Length: 553
Image (cartoon, rainbow, N blue to C red; front, side, top):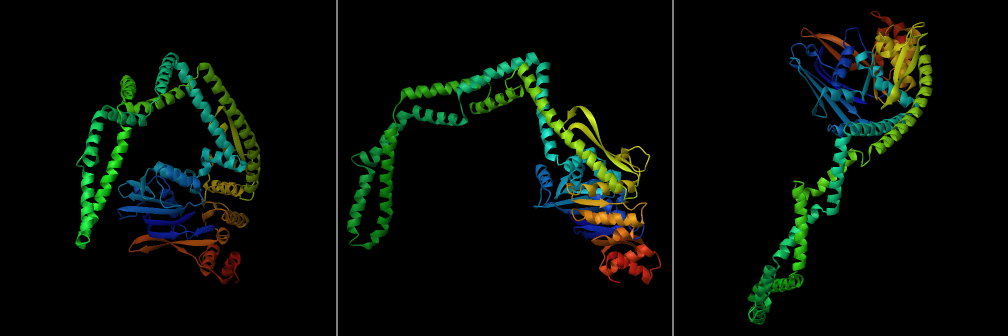
């Protein structure tokens, strides 16, 4: 949900800090007070193109920020992680800066981002109904996803997409093989031979380090033996050895300590030295037992080193990179068909195509049933929304050979009036009709719709009375599952809201400034009365307003 919106120096807004609540919220106020400016500001922070004229007169720049709670939107959290734009857990912060010179900058969680990134993110957070450019309803991908969700087929659609990718990858391999059969056959032969040679070598980067260490030890065994024996002679085996000398010194001083305790500190130093010398002698003798001249092993190690170095030289690489070369050869061979020939590749590709068509056929059947049900339910809802005689249908246009999204293209079509041909919703001229159609669809699909924030503008265009009351009830019902906001001039719609904001405009130092206030219960009565009665508000009008709000007069 949208938690907060901050606006600075935008059109006629100098400074606004708004905190949002769940449920259904309406924005009301006099015409021209700036209600739509809030929608425009939110659209900009969600990636809409900017205009230098939106910066408040006399200011260097405008700034808009929005904070969203994304705890219930794991797909959004994953998108942020993948794009290296993640911030605090369960929070998404968007910021947009517009300069008076025309430059614009966008940020996601404090990191500079492209408008394409912000727009893609915004399409997962907010749906603004009433203006074509902001509507998810006019995007073919959104229509397809909504139908699949309504049909309970979203997982099936993902399976179809995966099957399509497998088929297309094999198709690409087969076409590449056919196009460059001779060259690819030669490359496969070379890779087969290379794979065989490197596999037979059985070499690892760890072995290279071990071989070098062993070769140094074997090659210098005589010198090592001589050095160890010299050390043992000096420390313990000679007639005058260091260990015997230290033993004697410690023994004499220990006897002398009876006459002077001052020798204790010196003995405390000498005794550990004697023990360490003894340990060194033990270690050297153990090392000497393992240190033998082994010419046969030395020859064996040298042959192994020569084989590895020769292979590395042949492939013009360092010995330690030979395992990596083997891995690359395997991967490239897999790209060329995993060692398969043209016939085997064609068979695998044919099997993958059949698997895709089977899954896509099942998806198509589910979509057809859901399309009929969705069309009927939305058409029924339209009859209560000043679109009597209108109808809604879901077109399923077959696509030759299919796509990653199935065997058909989804298109929402609407006939707003009886006797007119259904047209794509993207071509519906009236913003009010499009907004009410969106309300009907959102209400019907509210159980499966994923967008957390729905904003309706122009939904009350051209309606009143009973229809307005129905629209209000539908918006309130929708607010139980989504965060819903609506700009309205109709008291019937405003009275149905969980919260009501009033947008006002006043003159400050010769300039017009728009502001927003959250209305209390009494203030809501006064505002609904204004919407009902116009300039002169009577006690009767106030009682009517209180009754509409469910308050006691």
